[in-house]
Structure formats: C-alpha cells, structure tokens
Image 1 (tube, helix red, strand yellow):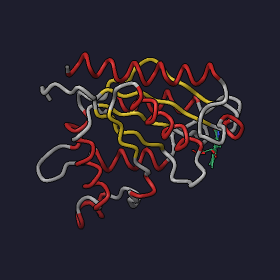
Image 2 (cartoon, protein in one colour):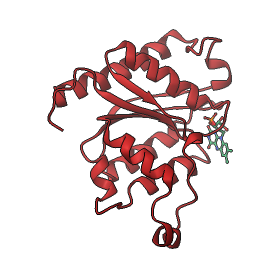
Image 3 (tube, helix red, strand yellow):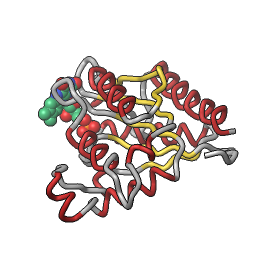
Image 4 (cartoon, protein in one colour):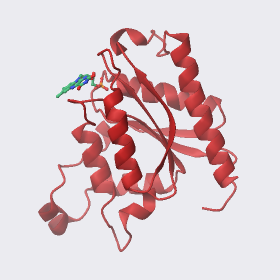
Length: 196
Ligand SMILES: Cc1cc2nc3c(=O)[nH]c(=O)nc-3n(C[C@H](O)[C@H](O)[C@H](O)COP(=O)(O)O)c2cc1C
C-alpha cells in the first residue's frame, strides 16, 4: 500500500482461544499500548473465528471456512501484526498454526501469501512457566518469515504469567511494561516509516 497512514493499523491476536488466556491478556494490553502510542489496533479473539483443522479435501470440497474469509479481509486492512504466542511443548499452538495455514491458502484467484507479504510484525508470549513461552517465539518468527512477514527483533516473554497481571490487566513488573511499550512503539514507528 502507498497511502499515508497517520495511524498504522495493527491486527492483534493471541494463539489461544481460552477465556482466561494469559496471551489474550497480553495481546489486549498490547492493543491498548499501541493505541496510546499512535497506532490503530484491532484486537481479535480467535475463539470468535473458529476453523476446522486444515484438510486439503475439505478445502477442495468447501473452499475456505467462513472465518478464514473474514480474517483474510481483516488482514488486508492492516499493515502490521502483533501476535501473542503461547507455548505448547516448546512449539507454537496448533490454533495459531492452523489459523495461519488457512489464511495462506489461495482464495478467489488470490494467493493467501500476498496478504502477508510486506507486513511487519512483533511477537510476544506469556506462560505460567519460568521461561515465559520464549521457545515458541523463535518458531513464530520462522513461520512468519516463511510467509513473507518481517518480524521486529524485539520481543517479550512474560514468565509466571498467573501472577504477572494486576486487576486492571497491566503488567505488575514495571520493566516488563516498559519493554512492551518499547515493542509496541517500535512497531508503530516502523510502520510510520514504511508507509508514511
Ligand atoms: C499441551 C500443552 C503443552 C504445554 N507446553 C508448555 C511448554 O512447553 N512451555 C510452557 O511454558 N508452557 C507450556 N504449557 C502451559 C501453557 O503455557 C499454559 O497452558 C498457558 O496458560 C497457555 O497459554 P494461554 O494462557 O494463553 O492459554 C503447555 C500447555 C499445554 C496444554
């Protein structure tokens, strides 16, 4: 896109559908910080966009699930992504992988990959464990790079997530809050430079 975007649009979501998800909490907080820092975030909950496990036969018979079509349109309207990636057995979640798999499939003559190419992303994670889900971040980066997304080097892994958020949904640890702000600010500024 070439239009000047005074407030870069950033799609924000977590790779968890769980109601009490720490990664959704982190994504929600990131969306709030992005708005504060001059971006235009859209937080989406993947629970609202259910998709069957990718199956080539299903795709041949029925095409993309309705949720994938809706998300494709949403993706096209945003220049940036912020993804909060939970960690399952050292990997990204099946939900995140499955969602991205469906979104990269061709639809109505357009490759799904063209929707991702040129986008800029940041990745964060949260886990009740001591490493904060950091091992999922390398894999999330790799996947995003494979589909043409540039991922900022900055990242945040919130460990001991069950205790990390206060009642207002903010990070109790000031340094972590500052780090999240720095990541969100870098994403907004970089998108300004790319598209402004
Ligand atoms: C199948 C499975 C595997 C998990 N493996 C890890 C892991 O490797 N590292 C980790 O930090 N937490 C692991 N966890 C714990 C998750 O971090 C925890 O369930 C977390 O709350 C998931 O993110 P959410 O709160 O956003 O749903 C695992 C959980 C499940 C269900």
